[in-house]
Length: 342
Ligand code: AMP
Ligand code: MG
Image 1 (cartoon, rainbow, N blue to C red):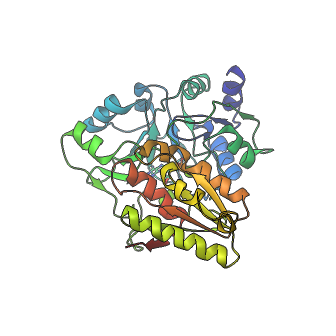
Image 2: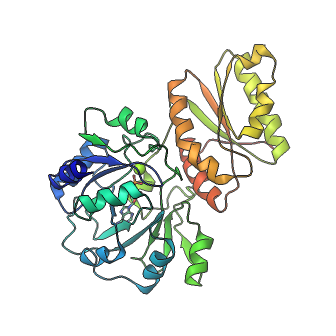
Image 3: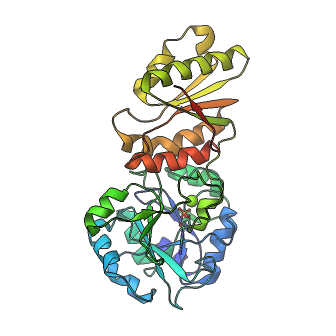
């Protein structure tokens, strides 16, 4: 930890675990250090970084003002998977915020992350520690795959607990709005604030002309090498459709990937060997446990990139609660290819 803190203070990059995904950290107040993050990830320079702090009071040094509602959310959810945006002051270099006059801040709920932030001086800019366009890392091994030879240190904290990136809530517009859905849901936030908030119209991707306020949301993310389609509909219809799509793919000489919850995978395990041998099955958590789906999502997408599959079919999930965050990532990974089963 001492070495990690020293490296960051010298302007070097250190990857570290958080409860959401692994972060690629650098001193947020050092513009040369921030630039190294963009170079290591191949990240577009207009895509701002989230600044990670280890205590709430630290934010006063880098923002103009903290609205009362933001303070309420911090009390309820920090440390935790919630990021908030504020108007920044001059302490934060433009390189960290992709040229914006606002800054996104979060306090992660992970012992190693908090220790590292403190050891590094209190302000760590960190995006997810993947190469731009690849699934976010949920294991230190994933960081190593993408960053070996590019950064001097990875802190290994094992598999992360949540597995998808933080919810981003914007406090710099006319209305409080969610810029990116995550584990902290709209309903949880509304309950704490005792009022309705909005979801940025660009979030669900249905309107191609809507301009997302979180610049990162406009980039194609997490696309696996094989063509991925989501199968949507009532449970029985999805079963029939996925089975027939899998059989058809194998009959056409393709290797076919299936992403589904443990319960649904059973249907594929029992297929005739002539079909079964053309399938690659990956378990995506459990049917009645959305958190388990979120935790495995990126891991499964990464594993598929190592398999020689031509097509992948995934089941889809209810677009509410944590399911909204899961679908937000899945639909982008699928490039909006959705097959209706009903
Ligand atoms: P990542 O750290 O890879 O999960 O990406 C950070 C996300 O936060 C990206 O989608 C950014 O566009 C978004 N973000 C960071 N700073 C701001 C900001 N000041 N205003 C709006 N979105 C931001
Ligand atoms: Mg990312």
